[in-house]
Image (cartoon, rainbow, N blue to C red; front, side):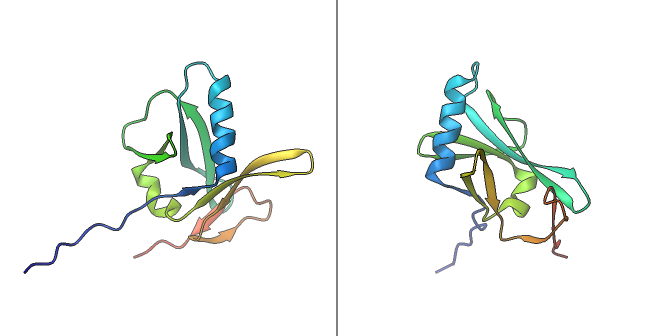
Length: 120
């Protein structure tokens, strides 16, 4: 009997409030039907979360489905985003996405960017 090994499943989790917010934004958009989460090199710490509504995935994107909502994440960003919980919160008069990423090892003072320890 041989054991079959599987690559660990990479991905993110999304709260119901995040899914509902994205659906509302998609309804208002012109032909967009999916949400894309990716990382941008930025700030003093290294990475910054970016989001956009899209009509097609980009080359190298991996598709995730949250109760019918398509979410695209670049495969190259999955190691850093793996395990991230995406929420949509309201704080006073402001509303925003909140990212709880277990891989973050440091943040810049202004909170705009974050860093992770790269595995060797």
